[in-house]
Image 1 (cartoon, rainbow, N blue to C red):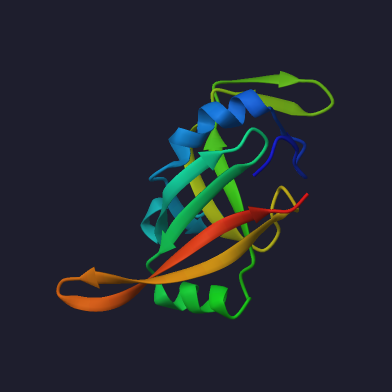
Image 2: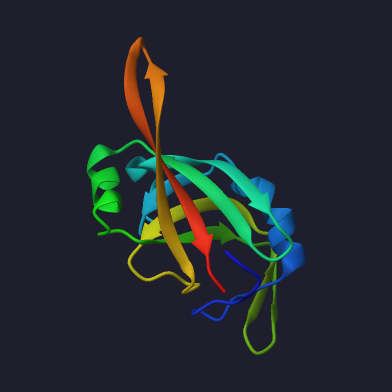
Length: 139
């Protein structure tokens, strides 16, 4: 996610995204911004580089992880509530909170896409693979 205007005319400022970065950590991951019972993972790490909000997430649902591996799911979208909004040539939300990340067909910010990293993890004495999603912004 980067500062600038999204397809739905939200304008995200660098200052707002920097403040929001830590609120996205540990947020749930959904498919197409659907409700809590349908969470398929969680955000594990966030980083703000001054222009881009980078994040990593683990996907626990194997069917979804396989769709990501096969390239059937290629994009992500961040969802959040906001405390106030300025109306200019778009909406400038302020006080972003209640964060979530969703795997989507059409992202609000076109440059977002998924990069897959798999790593082995120990879980209850057996070796499994954790699926990580990293949002990659190319501008």
